[in-house]
Length: 355
Ligand SMILES: [Ca+2]
Ligand SMILES: [Ca+2]
Image (cartoon, rainbow, N blue to C red; front, side, top):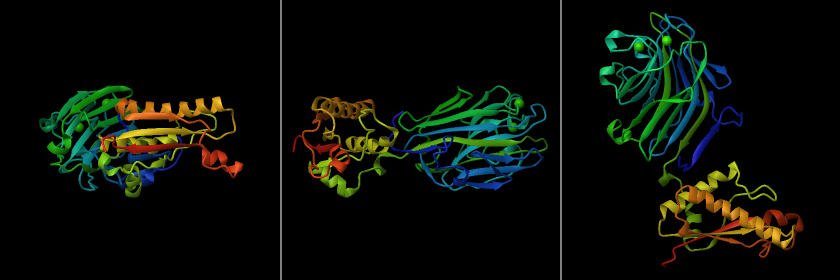
């Protein structure tokens, strides 16, 4: 997948950021800890939802990994869980067969339905389907119903939902297997051109019940290209062909890229993609603490890895030029204590070769 800029929420690693607090809970939903929410208790006629507070943009891709628990009662348990997307912050709820999704327009809904409602054309088995505009009757669904193994088994089930904004494919995995894939210009055909959407997860019980839970494990929303730019002042510097320091730091003595560098490198990628006539020169510099050969090799290693990153994202090799300068061009000769910080750097020049 082509990462442009990610808001990467490493929920499970405890690195912070997004968790249950970033969702609006309504109805019977309560936070359980460990980034989990109980959407309904195992009682009849309950309904609960968790809506992400911020809009996401389908002009960028997204990846979600969550775990869902559908309760323990296979034969007499109901009703299921729906992932809902809508341009309005949709605190819709309600109990019963509509699973909190019914009536939400315009909308896209991914249902995990565990109760057969014959008049809605539900199969008797647990199933998934892609729904639209608040309709839970399968006559109107976009895809499905697709049968899945019984999920009302007291266990957490891994769900992966991915949207690739380039191929326009929405895919859904259940416990490591793809169960649904749908290709469409959803923004145009479902949301009338509106790409900024709110999303939430809703669940309900009716005359029969189950406990429904969700645990948020990874949420990654890629911002669309146009909105991710260097600061205008920085762009001006770059366009003039000035040397510009890239805000990436490597581990001492190491050339490998680190996770922390990815946002900055994605900005660089965005800049290249937004300015197809421009080329990029990447200069690697290190401090003088090691010998000259080792320093040269280290700076080469680093710039090569940056180039590889950009090539892997589809940038043409002819646009990226690298220079390994080792320790030849220190910018700070006065203060040995700060030499590493100041002299070890990646400089870039961004220029139009035809002007
Ligand atoms: Ca049903
Ligand atoms: Ca079942």
